[in-house]
Length: 260
Image (tube, rainbow, N blue to C red):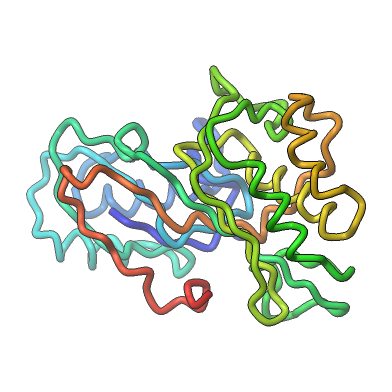
């Protein structure tokens, strides 16, 4: 399933066992269990933190329940709150895994660069009131490309066995008053995108030179990097899989987020 959700109303993606805290996973598992008439557990392509949104999260689940794809789609959505929606459904082989079969993830971070905050975009974008030098941010971001040790942009709570990741695309551009960071990698460390964004904002404000991102990477020291950017500006917007799996390329939908 391809899932879209507003992360501002959830305590992140992951189900918290023994807790009444509401998460995206708990909502989806409840809705799917109603349709399957049995407990359903799901796995996702990338766990998102509290406040982080998604337009293209991918999940998978195993079930003996036989339902038409349309029934899975419509029935699940009927049982979901308005802040979560399933946008596409596809049958996969038993060895498919939403996380481990993925070859890349793409995130987008939105910054409202305006003297005045927005009421309508509250919890949908991050807000920076000081002018940002976007060209400098984009230039600095190119130091992130390739396979590198991203310890300088890794949260202390990160549980990954290795800090090495491969970034194959990164861009910073403007769209009206919005500054848009888009980044794709084979995988991401905990808070990696938000930590990178915080450093790039420092570059945009002139507090860190363009060469500062490369310098931070070389230190491998998170304590030397600028503050983590807020969660509300971050969106998971794509997950890639090998073409041999035959998965459909779901369109991004009518959301204004994809008009950049």
